Image 1: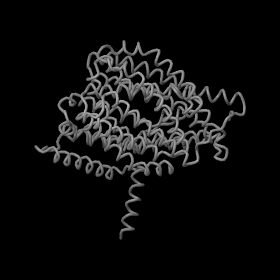
Image 2: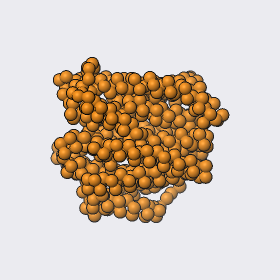
Image 3: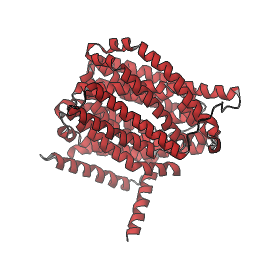
Image 4: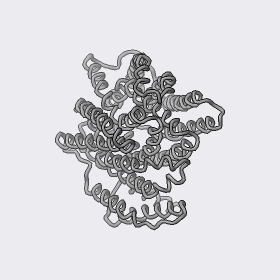
Length: 497
C-alpha cells in the first residue's frame, strides 16, 4: 500500500486543481459560451472518439500492464514489449479508420437531421479517435512504470486549460465551429506530445524491432489476453459515454448537452477511484505474478476504503450545494433540469467506489476471460436499460439506466471474487464510513439557508466537513489516507515550531 499512498499523495494537488478547472469549464465556460446543442455536439464527438479509441490498441495496452512485470528490463527496453503495443495500435488504427469512414452514413442515419453537423465532423471524430488511442497507450505505459502524477497533470490540468481557451476564443467570434473543433483536437494532441516527451525524459521510449516473446505460446497468450482486454476495457468507457451517445440519438443534442453538465458534476465523485485504479492495477499484476493473494486482498480493501472516504465527502459537498451550483451557473435555469441526474449518478459512482478495484483484479488474474464476459453483460444491460428508460424518462432515464447497470455489474464481479478468491472490499471500517455518509445525507435537510448563495455554500460545506470529521473520529474509522495526511500535518507543525 505504501507506493499507492505515495503516488496518491503526489497526485492529490493535481487532482484537486483539475477538479476546480473542470468545474470552471463545465459549469461556467461551457454554459456561458456555448448553447446546449453545441455542448452536446462536443460531448458526443469526444464520447464517440473515446469509445472508438478503446478498440485501436486491441487490448494490448492492458496486456502491457499485465505482462510488464515478466518482461521488465530497463537495459534492453523491456524486451521490446512497448514496440509490440505501439505496432498493434498502428495496424488496428488503420483498420478502425477504414471502418469509421465506411460507417459514416450509418452514423448520420442514426442521429438524424438534428445531427447535420455530425456527418460533417466525421474526419474530426477520426482524428480524435487516433489521438486519444495513442495517448491511452502512453498513459498505460506510465501506469506500468508507476508514474501517474505528471500524466494526470497533462490530462486533468493542461488539456482543460487548452480547451477552455479554445472555447472562449470561439465565443468571442475569432473562430468558426469547425475551427473550434480543430482547437479541441489540438488540445488532445498537445497532451499526447507531452506524454511522449515525459517518457523520453524517463528513458522509457525504446523502439526495439523483433519479438519479445520467447515462444509461440507466449505470443499467443499475450494476444489472447489482449483480445479479451478489449471488451474489459470497454466497461468504464461505456459507463462514461453510452448514455450521452444514446441521448444524442434518441432525444437530441440539446438534451445531451444538459445531461453532460449534470454528468460532469456527478463524475467528480469518481475522481478518487480513478486515481487509485491507475496506480493499483500494475501493483495487482505484480502481486498475482508472485501469487501474493494476501497483498491483493489488502490492496482491494484499503483502496476501496480510501477512495470511498474522499468520494463520499465530495458527494455530500456537491449535493448540499446543488441548488447554489445551478444558481451561479450561466443559464442555470436550463441546466437545473438535470438535478436528479446528479444524485442518481453520484450515488451510482459511490456504489462503484465501494465495490473497489474488482474489475482490475479480475483483469490481472487468470480469470480475465470471464471479465470480458461480464463486460458483455454490461454492454447489453446498459443498452437495453437506456433504450427503455430514455424515451420514457428523458435524461433521468439515462441516469437510471447507467445506475442500474453499475450496480448489477458490480454485484456479479463481487460474488465471483468472493467465490474464487475469498476477496471482499467490505470491512468494518468501510461499513462505518457508509453509515456516516448516509447519516449526514439524511440530516443535511436541516441545514439553515439564507438568501445569499455564497453564505449558503459556506454553511453547507462547513456542516458537511465538520460533521464528517467529527463522526469519523467518534466511530474511530481507520484509513491510510487520513493517517498519511495526519502524519504530514504533524511534520509541518513540528518543522514550523
